Every structure is written in structure tokens, then in C-alpha cells.
Length: 351
Length: 147
Image 1 (cartoon, each protein chain N blue to C red):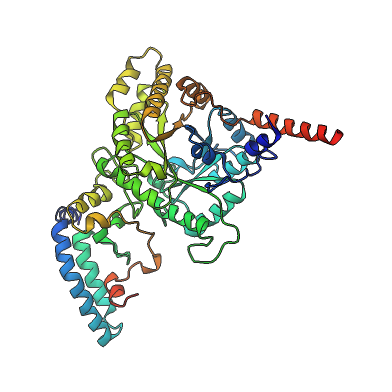
Image 2 (spheres, rainbow over the protein chains, first blue to last red; image 1 turned 30 degrees about the horizontal axis):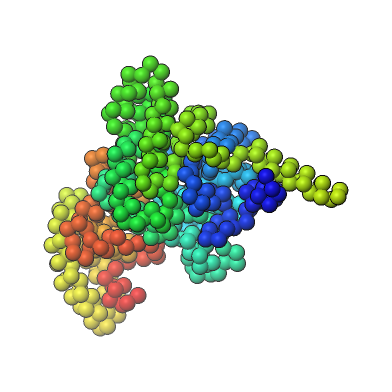
């Protein structure tokens, strides 16, 4: 590993912004992986119900060397947790590549634009724009829902900050936030026929990558992607398909009923019911889904959501083989690169 | 009323036709009215608009009316007031995730738009977030005054 290579891939110090490559909009490693044409894997970190920073880092460490970016959820399911911005700030400090999820449920356009600048200042390079779950489904149903913007307006807003260097008000920004823009899609909920049109709107609003809701139906994903490819959307936007890890048939039934928009075919539920070890079967299903989705034209990556099964993310990614020989960033390899670079400088100084 | 609202979406093509005749008429009438009376008649005009649109579309008087671009289904009836929907939480039967007894206004919107001539392309345009200052104000008067 040459010194320059180490610097280009890991920064001079872990956590430093990487040099921005041509044609890129951010300094982030996640955008680099996708633009280089690699198949990417992302996952989700559950922000803790705690103010302990070590808890965040402990949870992130489980993904080391297995994923290209980590989504930090923003009060997912309208439940209170540590904020996504704080989680991301802790992660970028030591070199992780987080995707900050920003939901429109809790903040208006003034707060959101401030957070966009703030997250870029803290080293966040990718953002996932979401409308957000309604307060009624969470643990504070008495709260006031904001929804000043929706996901499409939020994409437009951050694109304005980044590309026009100004706020929505028109007031100029000195240093625009270099954020790689993403949003979510759900090809598996009605109106099925219009879900591609919805993706087209999101791409028009500035989405450069999208992550989908849980996909348990590969045929539906195939149809959706065929239309997206036809419309040329995959040339302008990277599509990462969502894969979930089911612990049992009971979990599957619960997901179906508790989270509207999650579509799980009966065949999957039956497989879990009949399995001797349903947890292992759930992981096997995830591995198969990843492999099948990776084959579909236009799919650029997998977003693996393993809520409460995070310890198996590495195993699932490795077994799926979707990354080939490529090994994503890990804290240890970044440390090695830093030491190699320091050693190199030390030797050079001695000479 | 919910049932009338669904009826309006089912008859989105007719509504569009009617709208294309009525709307210019209303706007030109209001141009004259505001020239003669200034802002004196704003209140009754706003009430009239609220009553009419309320009956057919469950209008929320957001003051940023986009009905002709949303398949004649008012997006302000979405519990998340999404202007470029639907969200990812639509139930398998096409009902709203927050209000299971209500048809998703964006499932209705795409359905309504599919029957419309201009509405079918208008729904593909991006709608930016509403200007909250216009809440409760008349969209007709705003158009008549070119605000």
C-alpha cells in the first residue's frame, strides 16, 4: 500500500474528509464506492436510548469491514432515541461513513436547513431525505407533527443549499454542504403502477441514490427495476434494495400488521414456520434475497436492515458474496493505514 | 364529506373539464370584483370558496391549491400533508397508514390523474412545500390578483 493510496482512501487521519474526486458531489466514501461501479452494501444503526457515546461506537463496530455506509435513523417509527445527527457526529469522528436520515416529522424548514449545514460541518457526506412516520404510530402520539416539508421538498431544499449555495430564502451560504443526496422508495405498496413515477419525481428533485423498503418479493422488484431502467432512472440514481432479516414467522406477521407498506409473501412466512431453526432460516432467506436482487439489472446495492440482529450483518454479507473480493472500510484497516503513513514519514525524516 | 370526495376523484375527468371552463370565469369575475370593491368582499368570497371546495374535495383552505395537479384529490387531507406522494406506508388495500378507514389521498390522486388529460402529466411535476402564510386564504383571490 503506497502512502498516497492510503491518504486517498482513508484521509490523513481517520475522520478527515477525503479529497473530492471529479464528478462527485461529496467527500464521502459511500459515493465513491457507487460511482466507481462497485456493488454497495449499507446497513442501519439503531440509535441508543442512552447518552453514552460508547454505546454508539459499540453498535457500529459490528459492521466493520462489511458495509460501505451506516444509516443513522431519525426517530424511526416516531419513537424517541438519540438524534441521528449526534450518532453521525460520533461516527464520523473516527472515520465511519454514516448516512444521516432526516425526517420532516419533527423539524420545519428552518431547523432542517440548519441541520444540513451542521451535518456537513461534522463530516457527514450522505443524507437520506424522508417524510417520516406519523407521530400516531410512535411512543409520543400526543406530540405535534410538523411535516412542513415532504421528502421531495426536502431533496429540493438540500439541493438548493448544495448547488446554489443559498438558503430557500435566497440568502447566500459561504460554504455549501457537500452532501450526497438520497431518499427512500417503496415499490411494494400501492399504487404499484405509479411507484416508478414516484421514483422519477424523486430523481427529478435531486435524489442520487435511493434505498428501498424491505423487499421480500423478488419478482415485484424485478418488474419495478425493469421499468426504472426503461425510463433511464438508474443512469441518474443508484438503487439499493432493502433486505430484512426475519427472526421468526411471528416477526414476519408482526411486521406485516404493524408496519404498513411492508409486503411479505406467504411463501416466506411458511418457510419460517416450517423451519426447525427459524432464526437461521431468516438469515438464509436474507442471503438468498441479496443474491437474487444483486442479479437484477439496475440494482447497485443492498440496504440490509437487521434490527436486533445486527451481530449477523457481517455473516450475512459474507455468505451472500455480493461484494466479491472487495472489503469495505474498517476501523482497523484505517488504523493500519495511518500507522503505515506515520511510519513512512518517520523513516523519510530519519533519512 | 368523504364520499363526495371519492366521487370527485372518480369523476376527475369531468371535474377537469368543468374546471377548465369555470376557473377562468371565476378569476376574471374576481378581477372585476376586486377592482370595484377592493378587499371589502374578501371574506364572503373566501367563505364561498371554502364551502364549494369543502363540499367536493374536503378542502382544507391551505391557500396553495393544486387540485388539478393531484388528480382532484386534495393532498392536505393526507395526515402528513405530503405534496408529492404517496409515502411508503400505504396499506395493501390502498388505505392510509395513519387513518386505516380513509383511502390514501395519493392512491386516489394517481387514480384520478390517470383519467385526466392535463392532470396526468401535471401530477408528475414537483410541488414544493406550502407557503404557510397562505393558510386560510383564498386561492382564487390570489390568482385574480396575480400574487
